[in-house]
Length: 167
Image (cartoon, rainbow, N blue to C red; front, side, top):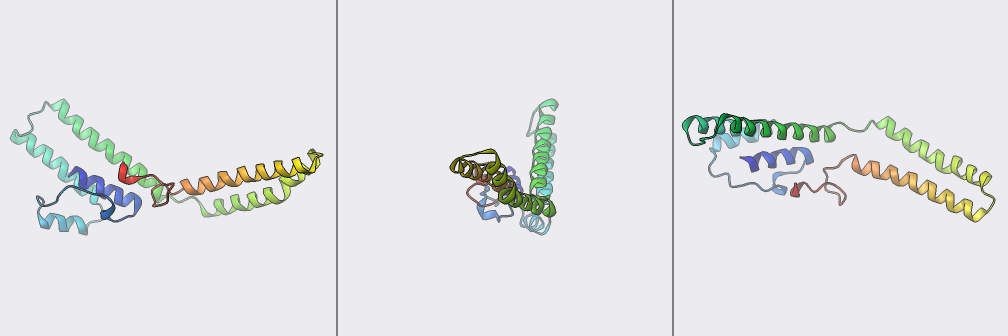
C-alpha cells in the first residue's frame, strides 16, 4: 500500500499517469476496492486510510506486537508524509499571478531597452565597455527571469524539473 500511496501522490503532483510511477503488485487487493480507488478523486486519502486501518487491525490481532509509543510514531510519520504531499501540491495548484508576471516582463523590456543602455552610455566613456556591460547586465536579469519561469512548475517533464521517479 505504501508504493500505491506514493504512486498516486506523485501522479497528482505531476499530473502524469500511473505508468510513470511503479508500484507493487495489486493482486492482493479486492477488485471492488481498486474500482472505488479509481472512481474517487482523493486517492491519497483513501490509500492512507486503508494503510492506517491495516496497522490498527493487525495491532489489535497481535500480528504487530509493537509498543504503543512506537506504533504512534508510525501514524506520525504517515501524517508528516501527507503534510509534505499537501505542501508539494500547493506548489503546483497555486499559479504565479498572471498580471504580475506580465508586469515583470514589461519592466524587464523597459529596463533592457531604455534604462541600462542610457546609464552605461552616460557613465562609461569607452563605447565597447559600455556595450559589454549593457549586454551582461541585461543578460543576467533575463536569465534570472527565465530561471524563475522554469522553477514555477517544478514537477513536469522538462529536463530541469525535479525527477519524481527518483523521489
